[in-house]
Length: 164
Image: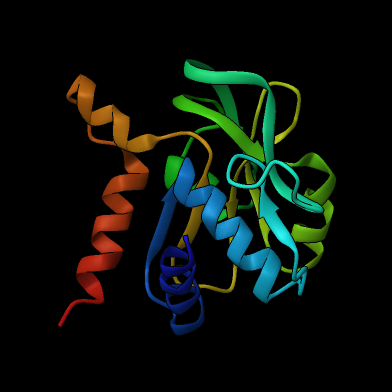
């Protein structure tokens, strides 16, 4: 995990494109909580069930092989990328953002980019970063159905633009 957190920090601090989905989202939130919000004990309940600061926790309702109707938040870059007010995305996870930490993430510079059916955060973005998006859902799974996903296409374009 520590190696993944170092790579995420590097991408965040150096302005490199980063798209964290499912576990990648969870790790990026941990990295941000530890290094930006200075929550030194920020932890992941799956890895350490006794963590004092469970930034990532067991979801109230498992999203294994689940699909939801979600809403990109108007005015966000994710809304711009999707170009619509309602999307359907799929998941394969049981862990996610601890809702108690979301206000701190937002106060620290993250922005909620997509909300779930009850208004819960399902995707985050760093508005001052060239391309840093975190999703609890897995847009890459669209390839299983033979579809090209707008977020994946935008990520590939951003990565290609930054290549040497």
